[in-house]
Length: 428
Ligand code: NAD
Image 1: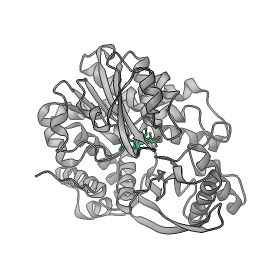
Image 2: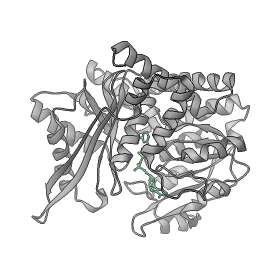
Image 3: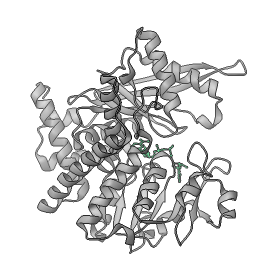
Image 4: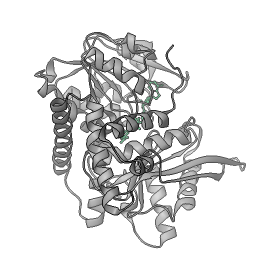
């Protein structure tokens, strides 16, 4: 019987253990890298608009900073758990390493749903988060960024609180800030565009023109929307997009077999990446159950929402036409599904390579903030495409030359780099 409940941290550890074993990593390094080096679990009391006080649970977890200051988003989600944040912090370490930027892995989370808080309440919560962590964050320690349901405004409130406490201006303390307030041009597009830069390179290796391909995706938030935009711009056809509907508390798949108009769907989505069901139907989209996205007869599946979406239980629903699984989300595939994917001959673009465009551009943002000199958008995209292409080529070459599953090839490169830094520092 296949599992129905997955723990993302266990998944992250299983993925690591498999490659650590094949690399023959010594036991000390293995022990150090299979868990976070620091965890802070805390509560944030917030005065609500009605005068009551609510207490929110929060985390900041640093997996490893041997290669540089920890880097990682702060996720706002009602189902956030310590294990999700642990897993995400671990994946950040590998992500920074695989694209070879001098940063480590960290992640944060606050257990709440921003749909249910006013802007003032959200501001107080963001400031409370930073007040509690002020001594632990900073450009040389740990640099947060947005993640699911957090955005540039949240980052700016956090920066303002940090700068008030620290009595100075430290714009490289946090990334994903609004442009004009220390943010980098291109950051909002970076993760989604990065996904497609990598996909484009893979299709080239496979001798498949991108214009001849079709795709179905889950998630139309920051990552999904910009991946969809770039993929369509390059001539690919998206036939279905699934996303969460806050009002009905369920997901729907919006399908148009002759191709979704990404611009049009973006104009009817809310701030959290939910597409308006009634408006989509009026525009001629079929409104199907949420899980239909995975069943479409397409060449490419792009999970761009949450973890644990591709499991052995749903794998049989994947069409035989699918050739590429492009993991735009973090941890969308469970480890027990990897053997099935490999056996079917589907090529995986593993999450921590595929969606590394976000952290790469965050790194560019830090560099620009440190120089106090900002690049124009073409320069950002050019550097981003260069980094993503270089990382993809190294992973693909290793996979082809050694007959490795793409995820294992990406892990091999990343783990080797981090283990080397750990060794050089004398930690193991
Ligand atoms: P987001 O909050 O902007 O969007 C999330 C999207 O997923 C929304 O469209 C939402 O409707 C959809 N969704 C949520 N639950 C769903 C469900 N059960 N079924 C179908 N759709 C559902 O988040 P984002 O920033 O786009 O992040 C998406 C994924 O990419 C996450 O795994 C995140 O960790 C990862 N990621 C994000 C970035 C970044 O720069 N934002 C960088 C790297 C990785």
